[in-house]
Length: 337
Image (tube, rainbow, N blue to C red; front, side, top):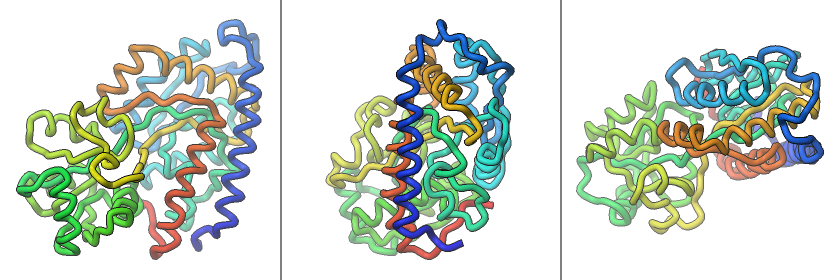
């Protein structure tokens, strides 16, 4: 499959936005959740997650499941369907004809999946309805502890090092790889890429000095950072100070305007009615305002999401616009299979 054309990407983004604006408008007309008397949901909800138990997505889903069930009056059952970097779960949700099945999907599954996999099997703009952002986090630019430089000095050294320096990621087409390629473009770096089976192996390579840099999720980095074993230069998005006090945004280190947000969102198949999408969206926003849920997500290295379906549609469109030039410029990249 060839990368999408600019016109196709823009048309997809417009379809998302129009559909979600309609859903967001409908949500405003729905009375308070506990006063609603709708026929949905009539049975337990199935929340599909594309990663195994213990993964970040699974943690988020299980943090939200019981509070959502309490609001909606039906159980919310988490179903793990790992494989193909989460694409199996995204495809299952997109192709479902069940209005009680939904997914907790990674940002790439809702934005540029057709660019990253030639046989993705679904069109995010056509086959999925955005419900709401569940959780987001900045990625952390980490450096090998063997490097003598830190902060702005290290960022200058990266540029001077050219291709002599390497960065690690858990594979081509993963969020960590794409975010670093965006960062390289913004900073004028020529750092070479080394792929590893997963982020734990990337951390080991950093600690051993086999790679000099990596963008990593806070949940994995926090224990090592607190122990002083893994230097963190900065975060790719606002909110890093909440998770790692004293760590700046990369924007503050001279990389002006560079922001990359790593997030998960709830999405439903196209068979869901506007009433169901609106009610679930309102339930999600209610749950994400609960202090216990917020504290749990932060302990896991995530910031609570929020906003309605229309806000999520705008977020999707913005990330498509951010990643599209990179994906059109490079040879076709594939997500893990």
